[in-house]
Length: 385
Image (cartoon, rainbow, N blue to C red; front, side, top):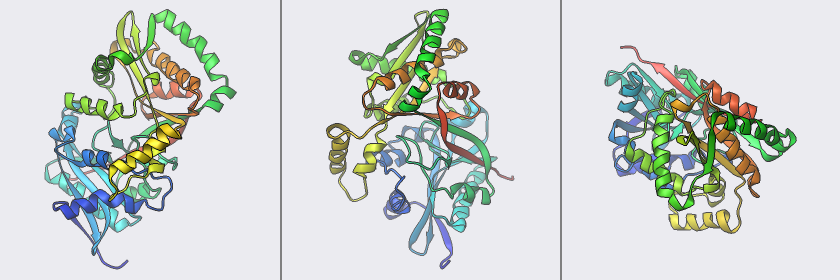
């Protein structure tokens, strides 16, 4: 291959432009890739706008062959993660590269060296930039991604393994189709079980109140941080991060697919399904050089005027520690799937991601007839002192 690879830190506007636009070049011939809205990608990468950068430090790098960009990576330290999990590690994210082992290894090495120079013991990823955003390398299930889930070419896992990285953790995405649920009489069977659990444990479930959305999102934020606090890799969100999450999801929010659960009249958990806006973005196809207003007009056509969305993703669910082992999670899961079954347009649901170590939720998803259809993987490399 002509020209050796060089990796340099992203510092100039020209470098950032190349870094920002690289995915559109890398995936231009891949029909599965879904481009993000340019504004969302800018907000993710902008250290002044993304609230996670208030407690992180990091740099962006790009690999070049001559004057051609061939890959990107970010190296960073998540201080809150290390404090919360009592670890001493760094991270890599924003990892995209051609099927080019030299370029991939050079990028991963620069990230490891960056982390090592700051005295840390290992580098883990990809994560761009917290567990609430893009996580993992897709290693199985190379189909179009649902909203707010990453996608990559099938060769990425090989590149990481060859660069000395090993599996740290897998996360699963589950699929359930309307047809599959009907064929297996899933809902009839689970309705009986759900009603029995609700009666036995004094569980009540309600829709989110459309007239009190501000107050409801305050309750959601309260439950979210306490519900996930023991999960592998999870770090409680700061108030600004929670506000940003609510603002982001609010663009796609559908109240019919959001529920709260109480136990003995005490807030216990929540679940939220979101229409898969990626089905719209695949057709609107945001791209550098196009004013976002034109993208949004095309998106509006495919979203509201000639709707194409027949998938819902269930990305958010949580039950407070005091109410676990009472079946609240299964009850919530049933109610959101019932809402999907009652929808005239929705044919498929994606429940993900779920940690492979979360045996309870994996078991619940399978008991509802869902099947694992995608696996994303975290990788890690120890760093010698």
